[in-house]
Length: 442
Figure (cartoon, rainbow, N blue to C red):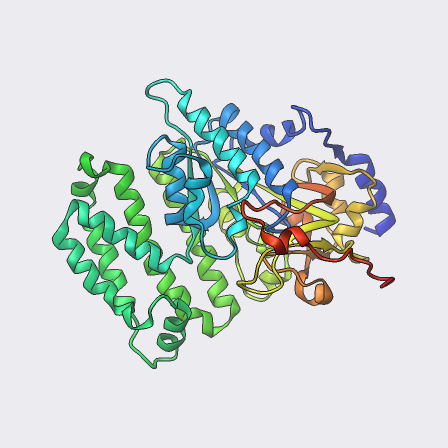
């Protein structure tokens, strides 16, 4: 569809977001029969994305009985949060519960918007009557190789000390590499050293073989504690494969990571029961159907694709977009968080097209509106800002081609957004960066 015609269509079909209670009624209507609602983000550091996902999530839990929030975070870090929101564990506040998120980028979960959501979730769970199942908070990612090994060992020390010794011997395969999982992947992936694949598989199988016995031991935490230990053992197995694949090419490691997240999501739904419903928070690049992007043409799949293939219409996929503003991001891996200026969307991009609608914030529903679907069906550039933002190379670093109508069932656009506030912002974040003067450079 020509750009001018697409603009006019979207101006007619866009639904303004006023901040009122009814803003997300269309999403709730589409989610009524869903098992999984995927809530994306166009960056890992935008306040509006977190705040509005929280608004939608609260309604999904309160009105439609969703039982879990699954996030693009590591399982053991999220498990501490899960215990706190369910009234368990030793953390006294949401800030303390988030204390496990120590690995870069801490601000993804250690931020004020997440604290507000967790405070609400804990209070909501505490208000439930006896017999009602509290909503939980779970991690889907697989970067926590060593933390997950330690979690498995800690669990086995409580329920089966001899099994803990056997597990320690198996996981000892990684000891020569210290905490450097990438070094292990490089050495094992190139065949310089024997891999630990057999040991981590044997450990997972042994744990699963004892599932009935372990899960019945209430003093050790019972069914929930066993489930968490099993997920950590599965994560160790998948992370071992992931780190070996890192040096074989991007598509191989990306696919393993997203397959792990999709597998964990499905396992969580099985654990919670046949009527359970989960809302997942992750980046658009993970949740927008990869088949509608150049990622898919390059051999990459993602969670959005796998979820649609598994659940069909029982999955709802919501993407987020912004045109300009500020964002919390780093300039390189493991560098401090900065408050950076987001450049206006490039000409010809979806960001520029949505900016032309002329509303500060609005919703589009290509899943249920054929006119909107057609207006968003032309392949255009789409921006993705992760934990690193490099505006000086933005076209190469942050844009890819996509068909937005095929990617998402719903699109939420916030034309000007502001940076997410970390719990420990630091001088680099408070100082920010000089105002972006591109393209005039004045």
